[in-house]
Image 1 (cartoon, rainbow, N blue to C red):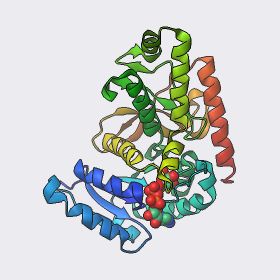
Image 2 (image 1 turned 180 degrees about the vertical axis):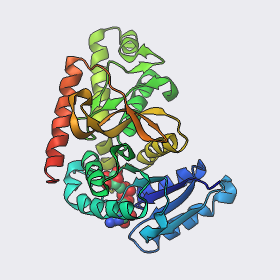
Image 3 (image 1 turned 90 degrees about the vertical axis):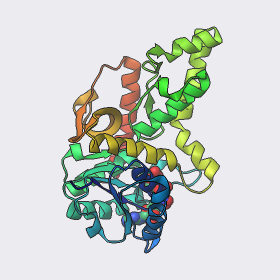
Image 4 (image 1 turned 45 degrees about the vertical axis):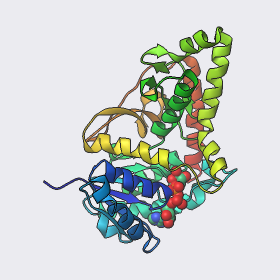
Length: 318
Ligand code: APR
């Protein structure tokens, strides 16, 4: 039986980590594509030569030719510029939409049956553009943002409470920008509300809310925090891990419930826009969007986030 095939479009910082993670987990054979000559070949040769040490039996190759992504089961896209300190993700829309158009054409023409996971920013707009250009059904075109935004929120909660990250459950919804919506009400440690644990720790509901608000604000600004510290480029380990979790759920039909940038068709009162919501990811891609009741505050935050996504997508004139 043939191994699954994963194509990675963009062989920069995230692309390199993606290739290594896919190989280490033996998710399938990996093809790394970039327009820069020799670089993807060099990066993948380096990774492949670690196979005897790490013990993975998949092939990892680099290319500058879209033909080599033929028959891919999953394509993960990171092609595009990352932001520099002081830039918002939205500032990348001009340059990255040109890149995304050419990438989507390459995928459409060479891997027409693939599931596509976009990481390039501004995320919600780039996913929308990719779906329009490929013409693929929306269950096969999705974006990675929510897994990472949620992971950041979970990490901050775990560090604050001194508990394992494995026992923290928390999720963010909405667009992948400053208006994202970390869901406070559902944040828990094995089902125990985080707000209750914070109140126990600090002795007052007021202080608990203050600490929670600080974690929410840090989550929203977490990408920028990394950009500022790096000084050159944006986060790459955590976005790669997050997209690999999504790819793995699809390739192994795990049906994990992961916050995913998916095309909404009336769910949460939103129609025709890509926004981050919890989805069941399996061999059918986005198999189900899980809708649940938001309270008035959460819905208002969601509406505000969707308004920002609409404005950004509208500026592309699709
Ligand atoms: N086709 C394919 N690859 C391209 C194209 C193109 N038309 N244009 C640029 N690239 C490649 C670059 O050559 C580079 O190797 O995309 C790669 C991007 O890598 P980095 O600059 O290292 O950026 P990275 O940190 O990986 O982030 C990529 O993901 O999180 C987002 O905001 C981030 O949009 C950025 C993207």
